[in-house]
Image (cartoon, rainbow, N blue to C red; front, side):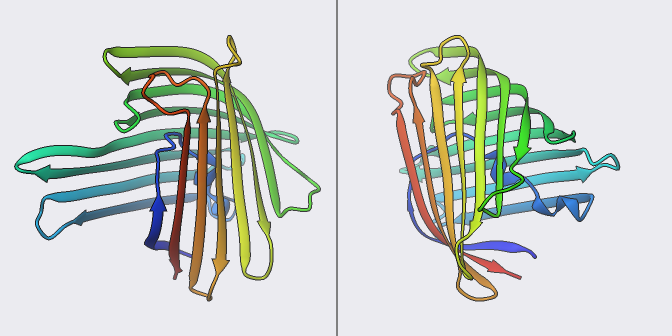
Length: 252
């Protein structure tokens, strides 16, 4: 089934600034061993002074030994021209790759990522890590997974001067999916990352979606995202960020 996000009705936005890899996993990969998806969108206003482009490319491959690889390339760029002066509103993107090897009762994951985000003043954020992913065997929810891992993270920020940060972090998450009723579904993922050398430097991120199956073809999605960064690298960056959006998905 192909899902197309048709319309964003309301968005109260800040920038979360962290990739939700759990939302990028392909649940169909156990039934097909290969998939490629390309999505791109360009929007302009009639006066040609404002325009934006978003694009995503992903590659999934399931091997004979049941190991798998995921590669995602995602980008968003927008600009506004006022009185012949061009202003870049948004310029962000990431490349994420992940290799998963199933073992006895868990999965071993290795991953790498390159990211930039001008709104959060991130010139680049590079990370490399590995971890273990577990699936709960007996639970009242439809699907419950959790993971623990370690990663090396290099960040470069554009402040009053170029600031660099290098750290080794513990990265952990839990994600669950639950069919609440015949037409209501909830999916939520929480992340906790902290610096091994200084646990008081940590980030907490939650992404939650409530989906209403209005008809066989139409879903209404309510998305709530939040993030807390205990010690932002730049003083002008807020510790807390929130995002709320309502949208319609058309399934065909």
